[in-house]
Amino acid sequence: MTLISENAQSLAADDIVHLYELDASVIGGGIYRFTSSAFEDAPVSFGGNVFEPTPIETDGWEMSSQGTMPRPKLKVANVSGVLSAVVNEFGDLVGATFRRIRTFRRFLDGMDDTDQDAHFPVDVYRIEQKTNQNRVYIEWTLAAAMDQQGRKLPGRQVIQSACMHTYRRYDPETGSFDYSKATCPYAGSACFDAKGNAVAASEDRCSKLLQSGCVKRFGHGDLPTRAFPGVGRANT
Image 1 (cartoon, helix red, strand yellow):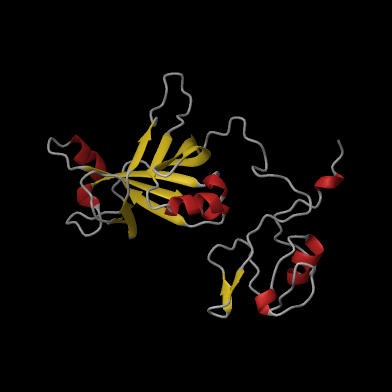
Image 2 (cartoon, one colour):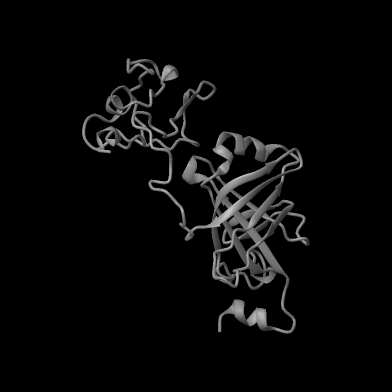
């Protein structure tokens, strides 16, 4: 019997801690971690990751009697407006991964029984749709990561010529490039403007096009573009 099972069946079971991870790295953002446990008024750490206390409401995790996958609702406080900025920058966070981690307080980092492997099975979902946003909260509908009913491939908009990568940004204060939100793997010293002309670093802009963007930076061969240059050749 595992530690988590032993504690769950104990007559004096410890408080359950709910931890949440909003992973937007797949769409160019960062990873945001929260805890909604009522007895936590300061950040908690689990597995080396810090979770900030934030008002969160979730429901709809239960499996239906028909066997259909649940579609939980997620509501996160937006009083500071920080989350609004993230939502606006990364397309309502649609496609981001959301994880619910449940463990007992005794297994958190810094406790006597610290154990990062002692937790219930992690619930892994993706942000399906933003359903509400105001000054108080933002609400989404989630879909199970394995729930692919009605899903279309490749799972994002098919554009023939325009690459959907997020390109690096030149920071004039540091005199260097900022890659914190970049998904394009280019990190070379050669710089080009939107027309493919060689320029100084401060003028570096990607055209998002194959020849003036990718080829100029990576040369010919396999290119890491997120465009679909061959889609126009498909027979209909």
